[in-house]
Each structure stands twice: as C-alpha cells, then as structure tokens.
Image 1 (spheres, rainbow, N blue to C red):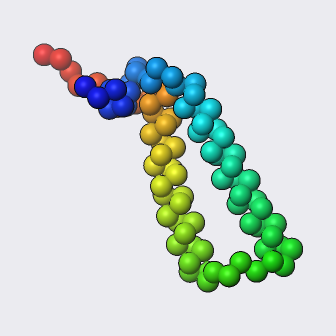
Image 2 (image 1 turned 180 degrees about the vertical axis):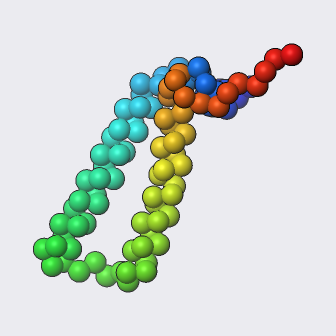
Length: 89
C-alpha cells in the first residue's frame, strides 16, 4: 500500500512526522504574517489594486486549498487521528 495512503489510517503516521509538523507550523505562521501585512497596509491607506470580488475569490481559493492540505497533514502526522483501518477477515 502507498505509504501516504497508509498514513491516513488511524494509528499510523509518516516516518518523518516531526519534519512535516514543523513545515505545517511554519506555513501557518507565514500565511498569518502575510495576511497581517496586507491588513496593516490597507489600514495605513495603501490601496491594493484588486476588486473586492477578486480578493474574496483569491482568499476563498487559498483558504480551501490550505485547509485541505492542513487536514491531510494533521492526519498523516498523528497516530491519534485518521481513517479506521478496514477489518481483516
């Protein structure tokens, strides 16, 4: 079975789970930092040349993609959560 798919099962995890968790944490911090910079720039009067609809769409797409990746990373880097393994007969 593919190691990635196997890692989705409860009680399994990737062999280098710490590295993946560290990357996940860094990415979460970077996203928060970038969003904070954008909000501060807008508050200070710097106009970002995008329509409100474009910004909403871009944020929605990024949010959906990152949340999907984030959920997978949580699942494959933890032995506590995951899909129940199929029963063996």
